[in-house]
Image (tube, rainbow, N blue to C red):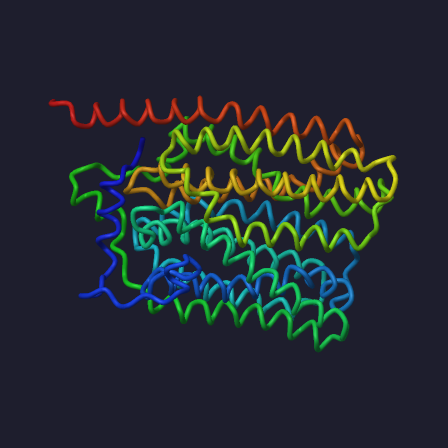
Length: 441
């Protein structure tokens, strides 16, 4: 195991604490709001930036096609290229965060994201579109890599629970942004779409302003040097084969996050008798479950071993949920509707488990002095899954139909079953490395 609760406390000691304990509000005692301080501030920054992202992602395709004048094919190609380009930023940005401090790195990246996003209103050609959207993706990947050690440094003794809370906040904010984007789509003018893009750019600046209120966290390399350990090399994370395998398995499981967004709408509309309004209803059901239950789902995930076990459960849930959804093909309207709703609920339960396991492993298997690098690799794996998801889900779920849904569910089961063995390998490698480091010369 790379880190333990002792090192968790050491990291938490970098966060200033109030001299006394103020009286907590009902929202705090019920877990709906963190205590006043850095954790609440980071939650506010997350909410602000994700509202902007939800606003933009919902209306981005229409902005580029109806306002800029690009074709659907050009938009899809350009965004695919940008997603792949963005993968290059993860590990380097994480290393910068380790070396210069996650707060300062994340703050700078938020400002870069604001500029890159605002530049989209100047796009008039396909070439310029690819260039600018690639810059936004590079900044987005870099931001995800820097946010990992920042969250870890502020989270305290239970980083998985806090990160689960941030995910619930992000889902709520994304839903709010999507509702706001619906108004823009109804207006359907150049001015409305430009306002949408600039609002997202403004959200990054507001997020940066909130981040300035966070305490400085010493660069992780400095903390590690103080403890007497040697810092990771320039590309140390890529030499950690067990962690790379864990990241690969987690990336396979991460494909599940696109099933309800990409495959399900096409399945409902083109392959079932279910009503089309079910597409929006399923999105609402998924969001509500995540917002209400994500933190609760993380309670049993307290170390790497428990995270591995939960990953197994998530794979089984994905198979059961996707099997239920596949049944909707060729059955009456009422039965198709029921099976899809059941499938979405079961799939979302698997999503809660996978997310909790992924959060714990991304922190627990990473050495304390290289949280940024390891967070960057995790973000790169998730980004790769996002890039490949349209092609993979299109092939399995739409082209192959019912057998494809079951086959993809089976792949999730296999990835989940393999996770505990990969985690055990990673912990054994970590123990061996620690013994070599402490052995007398």
